[in-house]
Length: 213
Image 1 (cartoon, helix red, strand yellow):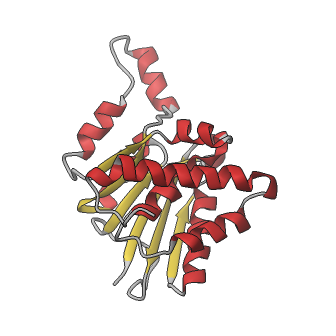
Image 2 (cartoon, helix red, strand yellow):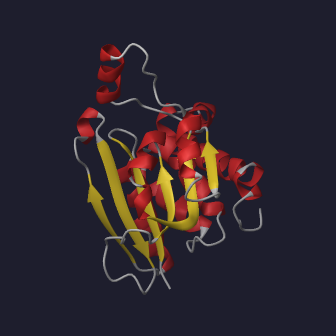
């Protein structure tokens, strides 16, 4: 069996670090993991997407359309861009944060009646494909951790709570400690813990989770 994760967001949100931590945690657990990345204009807040497949049945890094078990979107609008990769009734971990692209801003300049897309617009569209959506206020959780740049680690905490996710929590924690700057270890572990707590308080009402410990 394999577990397929599609990750997306925009440049600067730490998706590469997130994937590196996951891959290292899999290696520590003796679990096969392969990835493929698409950075795009990541240095200009452009779209970033990463395919990750975990398990012995994972032979290609690319996830076919409609085959991802979970879609993790660190920026809300990006979830709509890549929804076609998620299987029907799959799981979505969605950041409540929206970073409006320049193309949307230009439309508002030309059309005075136009409006920015809202989080409600995004979730309404996603629900046409799956009811299993968890909206995570990762930016505020990152603030609570003591480091604004830990939104990505918040999502690792959420992911660790999901029953289907096959990687042990302690291996993820070990990988976080190895991957982040030493002076930020405590803050990153705080972000991981807050993500896990939030998952059990909110996400696990709709998504099957591991027993809380």
